[in-house]
Length: 561
Image: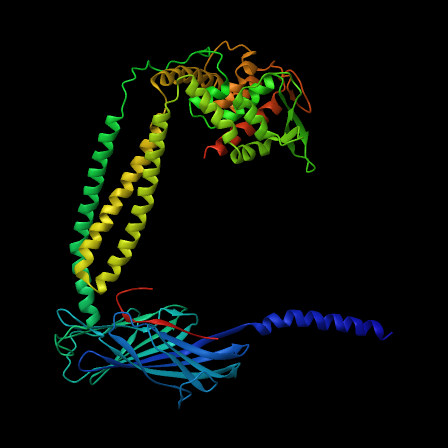
């Protein structure tokens, strides 16, 4: 009788451990106060003391840190640090402070594991070059850093300044605050700061009352701004010059290679210009679906057939099946069969067709290209020239982009180091930017550069009229279309990339039988749903074959863990 309660007790205990541990594992902390004492010095520097009281809750904390940004200063120098009023020696052990000089200056207090308790952390440092020169002497300081993942209940900012310094107006925080004036001292108070909410103190003094010289960072920034103002027009002008000259050069080259073909306007034609193979038509017109037209043409001639089936997941799939037909094949058709079917293979899934062709397209494309050459339709010299133009376009594009990025990076570095070379770097960046756009124009020109002979251009234009007619039919804009057009022109529709629209049109027309080479799971004279699906596969296969706030000194981050 006592065994069951003990088992239940163990189960409850285990559950309580799993539930309680995450709660116990949670840790959080907040600042009761984040006080900053700023003592401005004659000469443009400041001694700054930060005192933060952090309350830790939950799992133990073993360190706290403060990263002090040196931006818009002439440098930050660590002076000393303490915890709970006790000065700390430098080191990485508990009870010591670890200091890493640089930008930012990082100060880390190490202490014994602390839970549900509070510690007071103090750091004192010197910030040089914090007085900005202008109409007066201006002090802008981010007293509470912009990066802290804890809330702050209260922050007291105390500003002191030398007796000879004269305030022009009341210093302000970017926050609603109370102010208390004392002799040469101002106290500003803010409360309820949320995570990552900073405080920026701004104070204006009469000219030269704190320092007679501008800080080095301000001098460098003004030089950099002046260099930028000078460099931008130079870079823009160089870029426009490169673009205009490159454009003129490309235009001149295009005119020298232009041909007066005197082609007739393209007019939709209901009849194909000849009995040319769909694959040759596709190659002539640079269609990405050429191989699909060849597949459907071979199916109509009894070399291939398509079978609809279901996968183990219940989805439809389509297999291309090789038949033992006594049909003479051209060189490009033999190459296509070698690509589609591996040795001793008689079936292949339609989804694998484009992948296999991409891997061995040369077996299909080269014989097709040779066919165009023999017919006098393809100009090999223009083809080589087109390849050179395209290669030049890509080379110029990548080189100009690389030079542009490097020159921009170098120009940014020179603004603070050697502003005199910034205009030269801006000119290089501008020229490279202009050449980048010229390279895009060059690539566009190469894409439109015809490799056909005048006779080939004439043939392509004639077939373009037939292609336009088939597109109009597939949109239902051509009346009195014979139902036998469906299979007769199916291969051409596939070549022109409108196979699915072609099939859908005849499906809606009704009474159109399925081709004998297409074996659907549920065939019928008026049911072309399966052929619509396979044409959608052909169209998609062909398509795939083608182709922190600025303006204030200081800041940084603060936290614990």
